[in-house]
Amino acid sequence: MPALDEAARQSVHELLRRHFGYDSLRPLQAEAIAAGLARQDSLVVLPTGGGKSICYQMPPLIAQRLDVVVSPLIALMKDQVDGLVANGYPAAALHSGMSEDDRAAVRHGLQEGRYRLLFVSPERLSNDAFVAGLRRYGVSSFAIDEAHCISQWGHDFRPEYRQLARLRELFPGASLHAFTATATPRVREDIREQLALREPVELVGNFDRPNLTYRIVPRIKARDQTIEILSRHHGEAGIVYCLSRRETEEMAAALVAAGIKAAHYHAGLSADQRNRTQEQFSEEKLDVVVATVAFGMGIDRGDVRCVIHAAMPKSIEHYQQETGRAGRDGLEAECVLLHSPADSIRWEGLMRRSTSEAEGDPATLDAALDAQLKLLRDMQRFCSAVTCRHRALCRYFGQESADADAPGGCGACDCCLGEVETLHDSTLAARQILSAVARVQQRFGAKHVADVLHGAASENVIKWGHQELSVYGLMRERPLPAIQNLVYQLVDAGLLASTGGDRPVLTLTPHAMPVLKGEVEVTLLRPRIKAKATKSAVAEAGWKGVDRDLFEWLRQLRRRIAERIGKPPYVVFADETLREMARRRPSTLEGFARLRGVGARKLRDYGDEFLAAIEGSCRERGLGRDMES
Ligand code: ADP
Ligand code: ZN
Image (tube, rainbow, N blue to C red; front, side, top):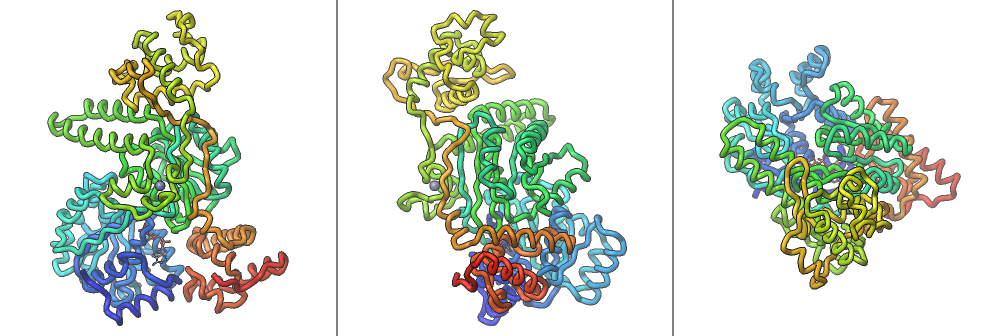
């Protein structure tokens, strides 16, 4: 394992303070930087928000050389370069989205040796003139960001990443450093092979994200529940994931109608429309983006305080990746999954259909389908278990979480916070549902069974004379969608089976009998719009001592400055730094310089302006200054 020697350690700390305003490294950053300095191949797997960027930003700065970063998305490069330049870090990008003038300026800068990092897209490396240029500048180290894009086992496979396999031949003497947040062993192995890494140092971080609070609640009305959850995050950034394009549009419209600054985002929109939405979100002109999985990789907004899944993703990898976009700044954030076991049935149908329509070798297709179904079942099991979510996620990625065994558990999931509500008359409800399935001769689906129990006069109920059944209207007092959710919970519990196909029918399984006879008790989750949501300890700590009004005031100042310089607000300061300002309320530039996230460049650029705002606000409201942290 490479380690930093004393001199390198000192430079890292000095540069970390000067450019980024940070006092210490995060776990594995030192080792990753050491590998970069020693130019020894590495594979660094850190969760989203774990701080991968610093790992490739430091070595060229210390060694005073030029390194190349390969990055999948132009938007991502642009954000990163903006962020670096704002910190006084010499970086540039070369990509097809730039004007010829801008590109010429960067080339000139390269000739002058002005940069430490150059961001490029993978396609650029198939350009001979470009490759010759890199050789001339003596580039000896490449960082491959989002390296899982090279693997078709990853969830973001990008064919253009395959061109990176040539790097080794093109630059035999250079070291390659792969970075990803995707932890599955298979993807890791693929990355090592495709890039032909030479005895890479492998650094795999802790996948637990203690600042995220996970909640999985029964879904009854996705829109009402989403609005209810977002009301806890007024004015904060959020992402809502839906399964289909149409659902994103309907959800966004419902949010807008509820007064939330929201927009939808999916792959069916034009590139222009998508860019506009991304930009508005970065600029804090939009609070919530309602999206399909297509959204996320290009966003660098670290202050997402809430990620809501309106339906279940098809694998835990997807869930981890999507929830990982919350709280990247390390501050508390909430992830809520609105769950119905019906999602699983829907996914399975989609997967089977796309396999049957796909062309290729049937054995291979079947194997791929099996693999998908296994991932889906793991996800479903994760959702229906009532155990610590942090622990379940860590276990899935082959790790143990430290907190889950502590008294009170992790303190940041619905199970450990004691929020999971069960239906007090679960067994009775289960028996009523099972009887209804029997009474309709096991020939109808969940919706019809729920209609009968609710006492609805639907077309089918009338047509089949089901209003005459003894079970008709037994659950009159429960809302229809809640009954449906309960029905699916019984499918999930294995008491009911659902046939596949376009019109699934519910049948009783052998496990239903003992319940109907009253021999076995059942526990069901209580579906309701306003689920319990206690404040986690992380959330409490994140706001401790912070004057909320001052924070909002500083946020507005940040937004004005961002507009003035034409950059997203997080480029000015991260939320954490604003909270520090609103907590410690420094009265001098020296005090300001000590805040986390304030480097020399930002002190010079914004120090006076923020100090004046703090000064004015504190005087007006009689707030104490220069508080200890
Ligand atoms: P990743 O690429 O792994 O998702 P980033 O590199 O974007 O994560 O880092 C996530 C956040 O953590 C950023 O806001 C970054 O500035 C911050 N960060 C990274 N390293 C440190 C550190 N050593 N101390 C404090 N903040 C850090
Ligand atoms: Zn927990």
